[in-house]
Amino acid sequence: SSDLDELGRRPLDPERSTLTASEESRQILAVYDDHVNGRAGRRADMLQLHLRLHEDWAAWHKFSGAQFDQQAFGDRLEELIHNVVVPAQADLLEVVDTIRMSSNATFEGSINRANGSQSVVYKEENTATAGAARTLAVPQTITLRLPVFEGYPVEYEVQAWFRIATSNGKLRLSVKLKPTRRVYLAAWADVQQEIVETLAERTGHGFTILDA
Image 1 (cartoon, rainbow, N blue to C red):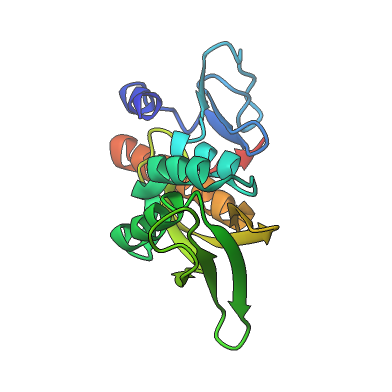
Image 2: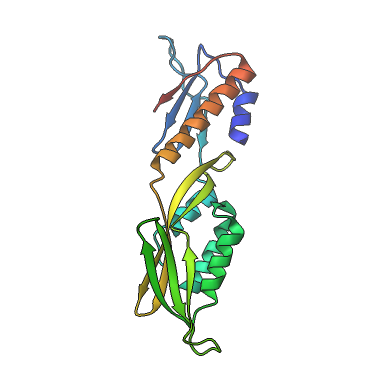
């Protein structure tokens, strides 16, 4: 990132400089003239790195848990499909397109507890095949690869439930992310490690990032 490049252009002095990190505010603070080893510093020369959540990470968390009808769900998932790794994107799009094109159907959902699978049974109305029941297998979970922070392209695996709900023949769909706190903390730690390694490479000195 540009902030990390700036740290490389203006090397920290291990005798005068400190690095602190606040996970709560997603900020890393470099103080070039800090109080170090009993030596008073002015604390006037600082560089603050603020980590922004990646737009994909934020979009999936906003999408998570919200229920949609077939059309709206299909449209939104299509926008985010590039992050899906399991099932294959083409297979998931086929499922979504089938559901989306069946807006005039009546739906019933079922879950096979033995193997964890789920399916949607639907009957088309007002078509040449009206009355003929069809069954569509739907994944119970999907796997994503998501970057957490802007400027740091490392992607992390995130699991999500693919949920279907039927009521009075109407279908509602949602994706619910499994807890992502550990993933976020792993990304936060990796960013700090990258900063420490980059500084060591560019300055020849080792640094420790302290909790703010």
